[in-house]
Image 1: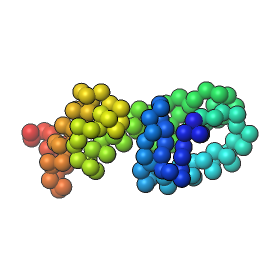
Image 2: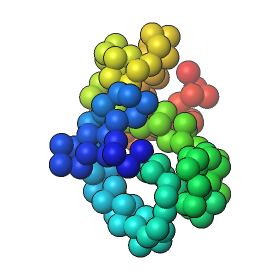
Image 3: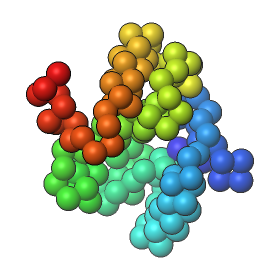
Image 4: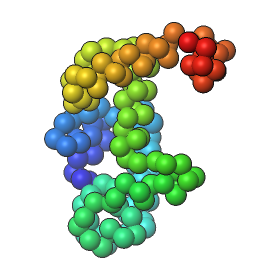
Length: 135
C-alpha cells in the first residue's frame, strides 16, 4: 500500500514485514510515485502498484501487467522477488539468515544459498550455461 513505503527511513513494508530499501529501489520509487500521481491524480486505489485497470478500483494490480514493460519477458512480481532474493545472496554471500530476512522457509533458503555458492564458484570469464554442461 502507499503507506507502506517509507522513503525517509529507506523501508518498505511487504505483507507485514519491514524490509530495507536497496539503492535501486530507493532511486526508482520516488519516480514511480510521481508518475503515479501525474498519470492517475484522482486514483482512489491505495495500492502502491496500480495500472489503468486498477486506478479507479481498490483492487491490486495482477502480476501479468508488468510483462509488457519488461519487453515481453515472462516477468511476474514473484519472479522479480526471487531475482531480488538471489541478488542479495550473491552480493552478501550465502547465509542461512536469508530465511529470516526474506521470510523464506528453511528449504527455500537452503536452495538459494546452494545456488549462490555454485554461481560464486564459476570463474568470471566462464559462461554459466557452458559450465552447467561440463559439470
